[in-house]
Amino acid sequence: MVSFATSLTKESIVDVEGVISVPDKLITGATQHVEIQVRKLYCISRAVPNLPFNIEDASQSKTEFKKAEESGEQLVRVGQDTKLNNRGLDLRTPANQAIFRVKSVGVNKGRQFLLSKNFVEIFTPKVIAGSSEGGAEVFKLDYKGKPACLAQSPQLHKQMTICGGFDRVFEVGPVFRAENSYTHRHLCEFVGLDIEMEIKEHYYEVCDIVEELFVEIFNHLNDNCCKELEVIKLQYPFQPIKYLPKRLTYDEGVRMLKEAGVEIEPMGDLSTEAEKKLGKLVSDKYNTDFFILTKFPLGIRPFYTMPCHDNSEYSNSFDVFLRGEEIISGSQRIHDPEMLTKRAEQCGIDVETISTYMDSFRNATRLHGGFGAGLERIVMLFCGLNNIRKCSLFPRDPQRLNP
Ligand code: ATP
Ligand code: AMO
Image (cartoon, rainbow, N blue to C red; front, side, top):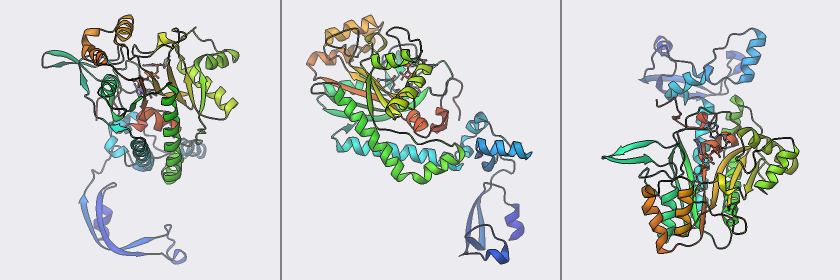
């Protein structure tokens, strides 16, 4: 049996029958707390002898590499592309096992919370006739001779569900963006957590749900995924987030940035660097890594966003930030069909392609709003990871369609 056991390759799957015992370390020099005295050993599936990499090598932290370098020890560095090219093997590292457990536990807590608040889970089509967010980031395809695209978000259909008489809906599903550039936080396919709900008076009701939902999810992860978070930290050390929610207006955020010497284009979007800087300023001033920026300029928001009633330069919209990066966008939506058509045309949307969406508002619709969150971004930032690909099982980016 010894020669059979030693002939087994690393990562092979075996069934073992034996007696579990606590070794006498003094006599045997054993290094483990528990050992199995093997009686029978079966090989269920044998791995090839020359694996693309060793799991131990792929599990090393930067600190271990540094230590090894200093002591002259040779450690094999496994690059991100090699890991992702062999994701079936790479997923076996303890940190990866933990990351995807955290994602699963988080999304299930979110689902449980939303169901308890009377949200109905919906499933909207992913092949649609027109772009839902505008811009160039659309995967176009041929749908039996008709032009179609992969849904950039469930935006149009979640709103049409509200038009259909539902008060509160949510969806967890794939979102497709034909991103052109290769960044640490953009994927071409990600998992979106979207909600849409009736609002009674103010879009802050949607912000209230954001805060309650995410504080609940973060508390739950800290209470129920301690082991997983420790395992992730071993490979990718991080500080836990501070998540006492804070709200600021876009103008207040811009003022803080200007006072800190950061140039912002008037009424413009915040660059990734400006977002990071604002995250640092808010963390220093308000002791939180989780905040909402409200009342964005209308000009930088999608066509369906409701303008502010007292100043149409601004909108009833918000972005949510975690560790200085956007994780969620949301807004009150325009429910008036004439205003919606005008805004869509102003934003260069081909109204013909979304005519059925436009028509749904002609049957009268309640005031409503919602948000979209990117799950991979949230897991990445919650765990202080440096790349969104680590939080996607099989990431799709501009250069990666496999595995
Ligand atoms: P979302 O598209 O969901 O809003 P986002 O992070 O892309 O998420 P944007 O409002 O589009 O948010 O952009 C915010 C900033 O992020 C931009 O000003 C830009 O600095 C950066 N950014 C957005 N998209 C890209 C991209 N494809 N490549 C590089 N940087 C980008
Ligand atoms: P938005 O386009 O801001 O809003 O997207 C919502 C959230 O989705 C995530 N996200 C991404 N994650 C990974 N890769 C990408 N390429 C990517 N793009 C976006 C971010 C972002 O905050 N319909 C609106 C939402 C709404 O108003 O309900 C929308 O899609 O976390």
